[in-house]
Amino acid sequence: MTTSPPRLPEALAVLRDRLAAAPLGLATPGREAAVRAARGVTDQIDDYLLPRLRDLDAPLLTVIGGSTGAGKSTLVNSLVGAPVTTAGVLRPTTRAPVLVCSGVDAASFSGDRVLPGLARVTGGDGGPGTVRLVVRDDVPPGLALLDAPDVDSVVETNRDLAAQLLAAADLWVFVTTAARYADAVPWDMLRTAQERGTALAVVLDRVPPEAAAEVAADLAGMLQRAGLAAARLFVVEERPLADGRLPEEQVAALRGWLHGLAADQEQRAAVVRQTLEGALDSLEQRTGTVVAAVGEQLTTAGALRDAAAAAYDAARDGVDQGIRSGSLLRGEVLARWQEFVGTGEWMRTLQNRIGRARDRLAAALTGRPAPAESLQGALESSVEQLLRAEADRAAERTVTAWRALPAGPPLLAGEDRELARASADFPEAAEAQVRDWQGTVLDLVREEGADKRSRARLLSWGVSGAGAVVMVAVFAQTGGLLGGEVAVAGGTTAVGQRVLEAVFGDAAVRSLAERARTDLQERSDGLLDHERARFDARVDEVAPGPAAADELRAAVGALAAARRAGA
Image (cartoon, rainbow, N blue to C red; front, side):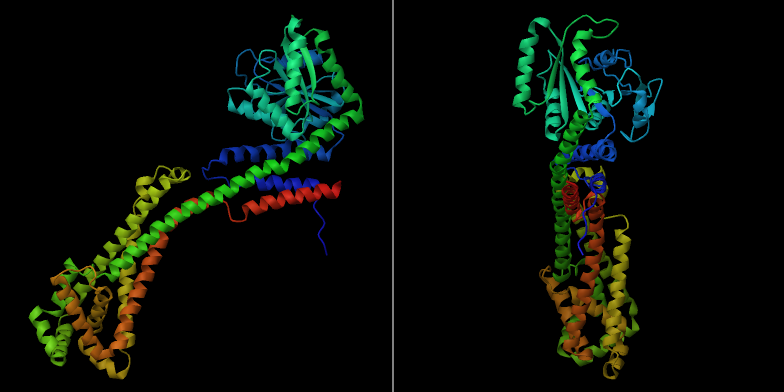
């Protein structure tokens, strides 16, 4: 059974939700543009597309927008014939936008059907986050005028609100002046209207009468070259104001056109259809900006994780080298080992007469447990120092690598010093793991000596002593030792191993040492994985999941299917 495509409003709602949740937390080059695109689409879906689709016959919302000081408020007052909005004397103006409609249409704009995120106020300026609603019987039914903030305001919230209101318009009347019509900001907004297919009219204000024809022709040519030849162009000459309003002959053409749209349902529907279809057509391209940015986020997150993984892989190699090289059998460990097995003269005698020496060693081990315990303690401390040194190096390498990546410094969040060394609980965790490892080695020795033939011999010289020899054998490959250290550490370990082989057999002893080494490496890997997780968690907190881009593409595809089904 095939699944029918979702209805258009449902598909839009899904796309809105996907964009609102788009994971763009990493500081990538395309992030800011994608955040703006995502916010722009979600706002337009909420403020315009969904409300308009639910009520195609609703009044025509005409937003009067433009640059600072272009005369938007004066034009609105002149079109209405009353002082319904106040021109900003001080710049930037932070007053609420003003929406003027007829009493018949008041219900269409008093609720949250249009611009649901902006509360409605009447009778005064409600301030930021509000729209002041003015009901006038001299505004024809079917038409609403909204005086928007400056698109080039120095206040970012004003600019953002202006862009949001323009995206919510059925019709955009853009006001510019003879002195500023070629500025960059107006044309950025006009290109946005062209890309979204918004129905557009342009008012060229404050034109010197003697230059009206020339300036109007120049602007008309610019509009045509920009793909906006269909935009209606109205010229308002520089004339003295009467009661703060433009002379009637200067606004009559624009008012007549707007009132004609309000009165003619077919013409009004054509304007709505143009803007609605244009906005829907633009969604795939605008969402594509977000999809690309999510992909960039995934790549960046991978680079950050790879940098941490490389640092901690190097730490694993460092621990493995430290374990296998014999470099741990120095200093305190070497001294405790000599104390444990006896003097060099004893070793030479032992090499000649293993059987008798084994008995001497057994007596020493059973009678003096302290040397074995001291040796285990020295080994514990030495291994902990190795683990901590490698964990510190890995943390420092990760921080250094992240500093060099664009998204890295924000993730470090000024905690570089703390993150550049092992976590505070690492020493305690390492100590616990090494002690557990030593306990495991002793358990292995007990397990190996469980059969009747070896049990008596093992008990004769102690599990602790046998375990100590196995522990030293794990580290005694002598790669990091020099001269006399090789003779002492390597030679004595070999003798100890030969004693163990007499008890367990050579294959069993090799297996004991290898199993003990593998267990220690696994514990070390676990500790380092836990340390690396500190860095991975910072990435995971803000990075997208692997399916994020696909979910956005799927939402766009579902929208296209819904449009085809409704065509």
